[in-house]
Image 1 (cartoon, rainbow, N blue to C red):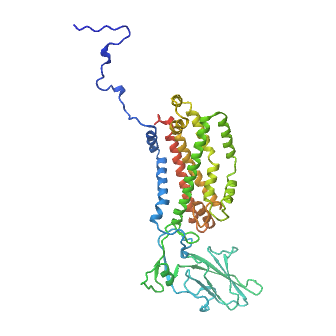
Image 2 (cartoon, rainbow, N blue to C red):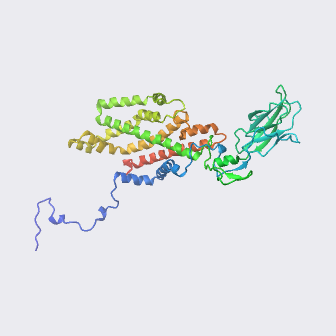
Image 3 (cartoon, rainbow, N blue to C red):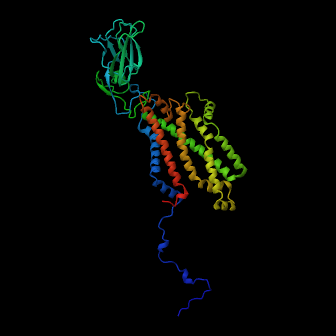
Length: 463
């Protein structure tokens, strides 16, 4: 008979400490251990809006950085045959003979009214009419909308300066579109003699053989004749008011807008992190003085500093002020980040691991870099994500009012400023840069919302 060893009251027998065989179901690990950042990434991927915004931002960066390597069109090159052309497929033009003003006068038409002396092209529109008895001059107008009674006749092209001249050759900035021409006969005192004649003219794109060869539209050995068609340069998003390719301009302008939108927030957020960390860690009177200085900086007017910095950098009216813009943002926009980081540091410095590090003799710089700033990194990333769209919008606003990026350099803000002048007749010049600004700002805002939710430690137990 085996005797069980006697134990004192309250003690367990030795066999109670035998190794456990198998796995107890109640203590089985059903979920792998995850770090803070692994858990945040999983929750970020579950937010489809934030994930879509992240890929949209990556696509936008690829558009402005890799796009020019694919679409090799000079953003400054002017295609004067396609000024303010709308988006579309490749266009063609008819080869015509060179026109010389005054070379020959068109014959007087047999019927009354306004007539065309030749097929209308972007080279010239030749108008001819019968003489009017008592007329001393003829006034010629051009419009892009139908002329109705009581309304303006459009752009005054000029007059014939003679009663015997009954034709007019229009060569003023012709585009391949529909125009409405009006001719009004007047007497020597400028009084209208009869009701004006109006004609609707559909102008076709035309080019001379010499121009086609100079622009590389036909080969050196090709000799197309008058009436043949040549294919013009393709501008998928159209051209601006100077005939520059909108797609190439958007890529070039995106580089300036995103450069300012990424570099300036990165600099002033880093400055705010350093300032807020020092103020929050030291505390006391130093903290109060530093925060009152931050309040003073917040009260400074941004536009006034922008003007002063442009003067200090020697940048005159009509010149680009990218560097003053970045400096103004860095000087004036860091207090918001400093306040957020200071609040986080005040909370973290009371944690037990910080007190333990102090008791073990850790230096202040080590505690801040090893414990405090990493534990506020979530707030810093969210702040940076929200600061980027704010900087992009600030650049767009300053460029729109002429204080940021100035032509011929491009940014989305300066392109919007140019496009608003022709928004009624050529809306694509405003639509595309404004759309790029809106999409980029929205993407960064949605990503910031997703990061805020993913990095919030209080949400780790949810879902």
